[in-house]
Length: 376
Image 1: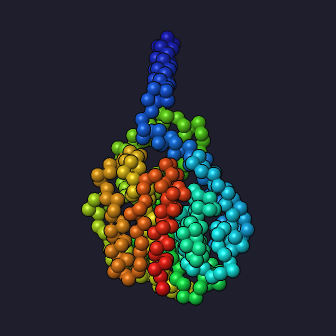
Image 2 (image 1 turned 90 degrees about the vertical axis):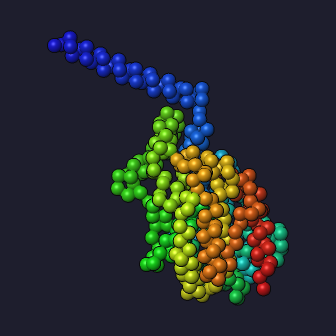
Image 3 (image 1 turned 120 degrees about the vertical axis):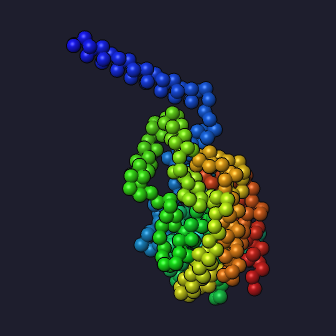
C-alpha cells in the first residue's frame, strides 16, 4: 500500500514536471522562435497601458469640473513625451489671446485636450497658424462623453460667456470611436444619461473577472507571459466577448458596427435635438459638431489588427455606419455636422496610442479652419 502511494505520487510528480516543461517550451517558442503578429500587438498594448500616457487626470478638479488653474503635467508614452500646462481657468490653451474675444469655443475629449501633441501642435494653435484671426478656446477632458461635455458647459459657462464674442456658438468635437454610443444613450426615449456604452459595462462575474484582469495586467511579469496572453487572445478570438449584438468592440472600447445593423436615425435625431436644447438652457447656442474618426475607421491595416485582437474580421463590419447614420440625423435635426474623414490617413495616428500625430491635427485644422471662416 505504501509502495502504491509512492508510485502514484511519483506519477503525479512526473506528470506535473512534464506539464511545466511543456509550458516552458511553449513560452520559449513564443518568445524566441515565433511571436504571432496579433500576440505581439497584444503584448505591446499591455506594456503601453502600464506606462501611460500620464494624461494629467490627477490634476482635474471634479468639484469645479476643470483642471487645477495654472497647473502643469506630463504626457509620457513610448510614442510621445510632452509637458502640458493649464491656464488660469483650468484648461489647456497656450495660444489663446485673452485680450481678444474667442472666435470659437470647442468642447470635447482627449482629441480636444491634445493628447499626443505638444503646445504648438494643438488644434487651436494650428488653426491660429492657418488664420491669425482665429482665436480659439478649447475645453477638452480626456475620457469624456456626452454627459461630461454637458457638465463642462454647465460648470464652466461663466468662463465661456466671458471669453467668447456675443452670439458665438459653442462647438462640440465628438470622437466617433466611442462617443457614438453615448449619443445613442442620450437619445433614448427616457431621455436619461445611462452608461455611454451599456453593452460594454460588465456585470456580475464578468465584472469581477474584468477587474481581476486589469489588476494582473499592471504586474509586468504576469502581463508579459507570452503563453498566457496567447491563451487569452485565442479565447477572445473564439468567443463572443467582444460581440455586443449590433457591433463589436476593441481593446480601447471603440466600436465597429456590423454590416446591416439598424441606423437608429430617430434616436440619433432625438439626441441631437436634446443636445441643442441643453446648450440653449445654459444660455449658449450649439454650433457645429465635428466628427473625429477612430484610426481604424481610416486605416485598413489598423482595422485588421483590431479585428485580430477583438475576434472579428474587417468584412463583418461597416466602418462608415456611424458616419452615415449621424450625418443623416444631423441633416434631419438641422444641425451642422462636419465629417473629418476625407483628408485623414492611417499615418496621421500613432500606431498604438490611437490619438493624432501632429500631422493628423494639421489635417483636421485645415478642414475646421474652412468651416469657421465660412461663418458670418
